[in-house]
Amino acid sequence: MVVQAYILIQTDVGKAAEVAATIAQLKGVTVAEDVTGPYDVIVRAEARNVDELGKLVVANVQNLDGITRTLTCPVVHI
Picture 1: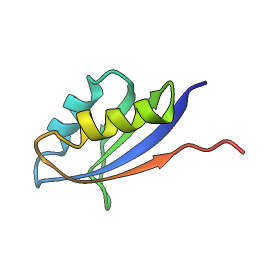
Picture 2: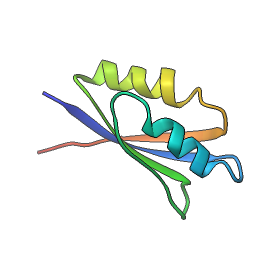
Picture 3: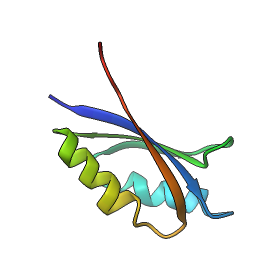
């Protein structure tokens, strides 16, 4: 089973492209793009379970320079 999520990221001014490029290189990230709107970067990530997904977000994404806020939206199939 694979757990997926979208991570919505706000960055410091002028950092969106740099943050997206860095995040795109992380294991478990399938897409990372800088966008316009209320968030600066949108990431799609996947992991084997919720714990691994949480570790990816907390340890690898939220600690990057230039990130000011994140919102993780798990994908739910009902």
